[in-house]
Image 1 (cartoon, rainbow, N blue to C red):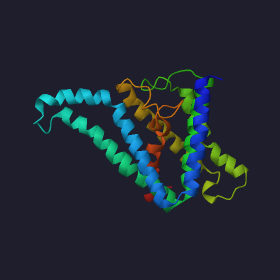
Image 2: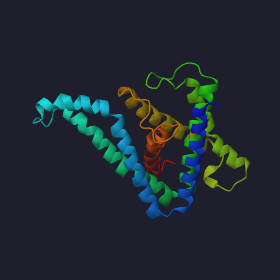
Image 3: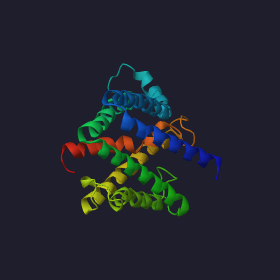
Image 4: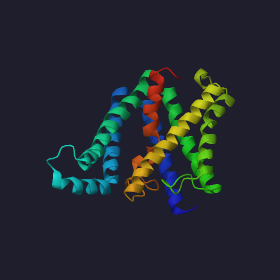
Length: 238
């Protein structure tokens, strides 16, 4: 086993233990503080990731600094605005709503589906390989994407085989489609941030987590999934 893979596994185990401990034992007030802290780190990594674009846009609008509607001026500040609005408002509010207003079990389900989806993509991508999924992320393969979809439904299957009482996790078509949908959004979130990393010639958003890169590299799918699932819940689609 390579040292990089070992670091990746150890970091994942530590993150899982810390995350589930926080979700189970931390009250609503402190959970919000933790979400804000996560938002600060993710926003900082987002800006750091886009430093190449920011320099390009800044140079483009400096000669026309008085022109408020200069395109590069707007592009420059849109990167900051996205980071502030998304990571400090949209993400924390949607995550807090799912955990407190829906249920802790449902929040954990979303988290577990995303974890299984990531594991499926990694396992299938590494063992099968094959054709690349997109130029946006060279490491993503079609087999990896299929593996993500397959693994995403395993939590529902395991829970039903274990005879755990969870009425909202019955093994039916609706729940299977929901798992597949969450996996799809998770993969799209990964590609979204990969696109910006590629634009800036970056492999990772930072070096915060050994074997994983930045925090945003680790939760890039989740940060898109939570707001989307939040909309689904308030619209009573699921």
